[in-house]
Amino acid sequence: MVFTGVGFVKKGPWIILIIFYVILTVAALGRSGFQLATKFSDAPVAYLLSALSAVIYAVATVSLIRSGRAWDTVGWATLSIEFAGVIVIGSLSVLDPTLFPHDTVWSFFGRGYLFIPLVLPAVGMFYLYRRASKEKRS
Image (cartoon, rainbow, N blue to C red; front, side, top):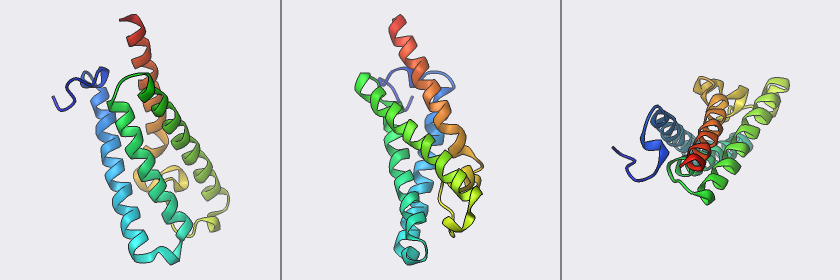
């Protein structure tokens, strides 16, 4: 198993959550890296938001893989910021599309990523809740 010794995530369907986070991290890093390098002046806010989302996805991935109180705290904070970002940027891009002339990862609630950015933080928070409950029972 890839994640041996890291706790709850090494068993069950939760490995799929980690795989989705890794894929989203790589996709957001690639997209934002290309955009920042080649067309930054076209839409700097949108491209910087995509870069920020990539960093948030990377930290969220690590916090979901690692166990312990500190990592749970990092996970809750990161996933909360991620969820708030998707809701705020998604809402703004729907209400006034001119605010983001170029899409970010979170535009239109993650439409360009099959709405996975909208669902993933909620699943991640549920995972952290379940992991904490399991650790209390142990």
